[in-house]
Image (cartoon, rainbow, N blue to C red; front, side, top):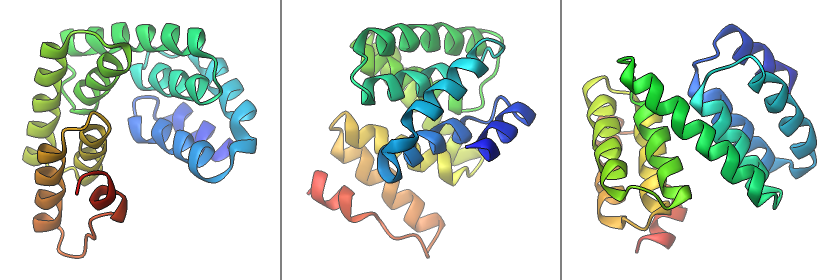
Length: 172
């Protein structure tokens, strides 16, 4: 966990680091949940990153702390909107805003707009990780047609990429 903390302190805007913490806790070692939440809570006192608040909300939700999750997602929503208004169109802010809008059940039109913006950046700048995260969010919101299209695009760009079996299970 300390390696993640150092990475985030050196590069606070690196959204994938926050997502990697979630993956580690939710998919590999649930025993690290308290340490991960504490670390993100401490970082949130001095960070303005929407990704941090989104990941914190996701960990709270995983820990069945729904009120805290919703509060963190609202904070993430505002941070993402502020970043986008400042012109930070790196794709991760658009994808993050789309995700928290989905989690909160808010503004489907803006969510669709942000999904499109994230896709454009991912394709234009050839950011495989952004496209993968977009694909998984599309799976989560049950937009299997677009999820399959995104994963096919990744496979076309990266011939060694293997479409995850979970995608085929969730989107037959």
